[in-house]
Length: 125
Length: 320
Image (cartoon, rainbow over all chains, first blue to last red; front, top):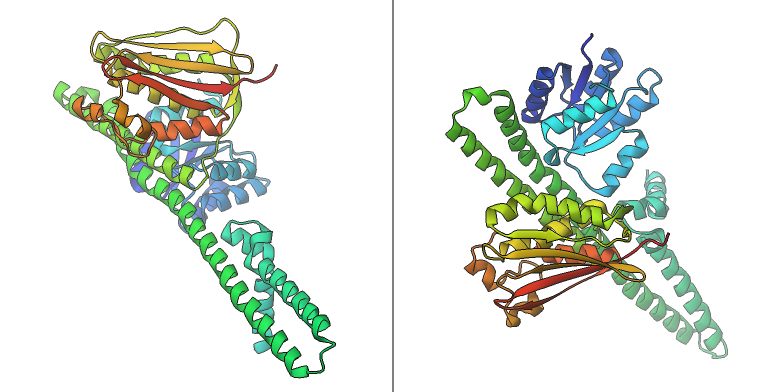
């Protein structure tokens, strides 16, 4: 079975490396982008199965990335999980209104729990 | 160029909706709107003075009166509007600070937690038992830090009146049972027996499930902390006509009478907590009280030193 492709859009390299290592060991094909602009470009070019998206990013923030991806007919179907430490109700509501599949606070979720969420969304057992 | 500047000023000055959004206030509180109101008041005052003085045969009196009114209203009005704008900007900065602080403080916590999880899950064979124990202690410290950050941010939001509750219909008995499960390991380590009973009738409430969970965890962990080994902590629920009441009773050290009026204050820690070397920041009860009150309920207690304490909270039930 083909590995599912996950794109991580995250500017914190420590967090990105931890996610990449864990998800790779769980059988995913992982790529990443270090800023919002590159993130949008990679979503359009690579068409990943799922995107893990931070909000506070250089060049283009997560909300702008989310909006652009969801407005593009070729990428609107791709589930986007917001993975951030911004936890205000307004932040969550804004993300869900823009089309995020779900919203996870990094400090509150273990890597294993993030992986389980990804598997639920992609219907993987 | 001056025309362009004037247009830009007029657009920005009169773009009330944008002003209101920038300052996180409603349109009628925006400086632009208040200036318009002030202008209308000045015009009305000038008209009033004109009609009051038109029978006087001295144009100087009219001019001086009109000028005085305009200067007075402009001075006082500008001062008031400027103050309102400064307060709005300060409030907005506080809100942004909480958001930025939350993000900046939680990021290194997430980094620590995920590195530890990788170490323990992906390299267990390569770590000695002692190393795994030390890493477990680092993880525990990181969780304490995360709770402290959450508490401090909740206190900041409460002080700004911005503690948002995401309400949903839940069964309080389910929440109580979940909290008991969470606190069971702590009660075992502390040598304290933990008991609970739920009423036969359902107890549906409309609350923020996560926040009420925090309240229950806080009250239970306090009860366990301040109860000696072989003591008992019991949780009772009672359904009343339009509310449900929870009581958390312990036979622990109790709260000294002279400290009871301070128990819900920020950062307050009873002398008993210091004697018993109990962990805590003194924020839990302050936050718990605010959550319960914002959920439409009440939180109160009774306590006798060296006998024990009972903490009660009630919440309105959902009408079926």
